[in-house]
Amino acid sequence: MLACLLFSPVRTDDACPSSCICARDSGTVTCLDGEDTEIPGNIPEWTSTLILKEKNISTLQRGAFMNNGTELEMTVLSLSYNGIKAIEPYAFLGLPRLHMLDLSHNQLESISARAFHGLLELRSLYLNHSILPPATEQLSHALSTLRNLHRLELAGNMLKAIPLLDMYNLHALVLINNSIESIGGGDVTILYQQRRIRIYLSLNPFRCNCELEAFYYWLKNSSQCPDAGRLLCSEPEAKRGVPVEKLREEDVDCMNENLEAVSYVFLGIVLALIGVVFLMVLYLNRRGIKRWLNNIREACRDQMEVYHYRYEQDSDPRLANVAV
Image 1 (cartoon, rainbow, N blue to C red):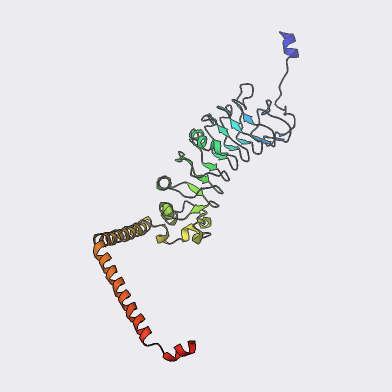
Image 2 (spheres, one colour):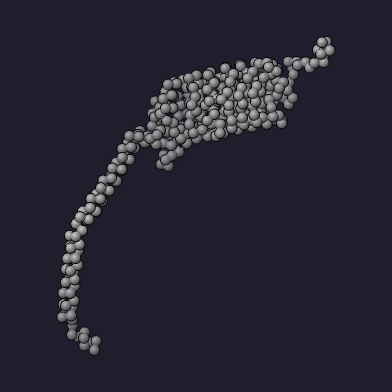
């Protein structure tokens, strides 16, 4: 027994993972560059902030941060610029006190519905420039477990709609520089209900037509969008660059647009009916029209014969002599 104790490896609190810099005074462990493909397995228990950057960690595996079955006191975790493509279920087990998680600038193609399971105290999640199209639909399911999330950043992810989230505790939702063209009435209703939330939407290509009506009035009557003045129209061409909140009410009035469309359709129907009636009149009177045309032709022929006769009678005799 004594021999086993003497020769067994002893882990000290001062141990620092290779290729990392540890600052116990601030509780920070910083690991930059390197060829590591997994999370370091000997993270000090005193770590409150862990920064992993520019690694080759393609997959966050289950329990990647479990320290020999021991939970860590970590509150801040930054995993930006690591080329992460997939997050497996229960990847963040062992971090029950984590408050801030940064996964920005990765290439997430797969996010498990239980990827963030166990992060009961997470307040801020950063996923800027990280979500690829295959993971877009998975995102809402994965975020549904984060009941206490206050800030969510999803800038630069080519999202076309607001993620379907339980936003009752969310204070800030950043959707800058995505591909959102319109926000429907259902999403606007949720925003009206969640008065505390602040949503950032600049640098999105809004299509300024009547589909934007509900959002337009929300933008005019609410202060929940701090960057409202920077929301610009991209379509139609006549309104490109115009601030959404500076549009006229008639520009987004679906009633007027529908009435105008209906009026054009009605005009087309009326003209078509007139054309059909005209053709029917022609068809029913085809014999009379034919007789009338024949009469005109005969009258023209008689008139031409009269002119021809007069020409022969009235020709100048001198012209005949000249010809001889």
